[in-house]
Image (cartoon, rainbow, N blue to C red; front, side):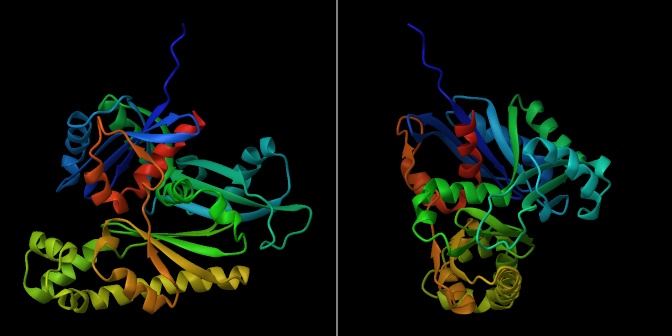
Length: 345
């Protein structure tokens, strides 16, 4: 008998402070988490060793990985272009790209995708919406070199904010969007040094942005206000004990700055599409801070929820500790979204 080929993929989230790896294996129409690990590191020089530590100390079944890029070397643009066949788009976009990206087109890797027609984008029959992503070649080459040097097989390089969107769709299913395709929702992934915003309508991304205010800013504010070192401030942020109000008071200036930037992003989207952002969904390590969901709900004047990226994913108990996964679930949106690309294999 022929042995059935098992399809597995590791989503490797290489953060600024934490490495998170999730292996998803396709079984029938669903996914099983067959591998998981994460660890923190103190400096960029320690990053390769931290990745190796995660891979060696946990059970993974494949060396194929999907990772992602972020930062100022990554440009995402939503364009209106003359309607054309998909096969012509990649050639056409190279001639248009220098209008939209601040880098020489020879220095970047570009990808583009025609977005589905919808009722929110007023365009003529000869126009279409196009998503353009451009990443500096040096950043891609560094990623690929790092992975190859660790004996891994890079399969896809994604963008953080889109990975979060894929994880949300995997968690909630397409029916979430079908129930009310007019509703706009915002995904906020608050990491250590940045917050990703991705605004969706009907399962299609309309707006993405990175804000360089996040969990580390909260930690430093707590340390300064309460006279704590960085490690103690980080612990107090996650576990405020009997006086959570002290923590919220300490982070309020940084929190207000972040909330104002989020509101500016919402205003831009709403003015562009005449559509209100109705709900906010939180993920990321920075979103674990006690009270941040309630504070954002008050400030943004919109229902705000934490969500579980592992929802609906079976955990293989022989290789993965489900209790640890559940404890860290909110931080795993990027890694799970990356690993969900296994359905494309």
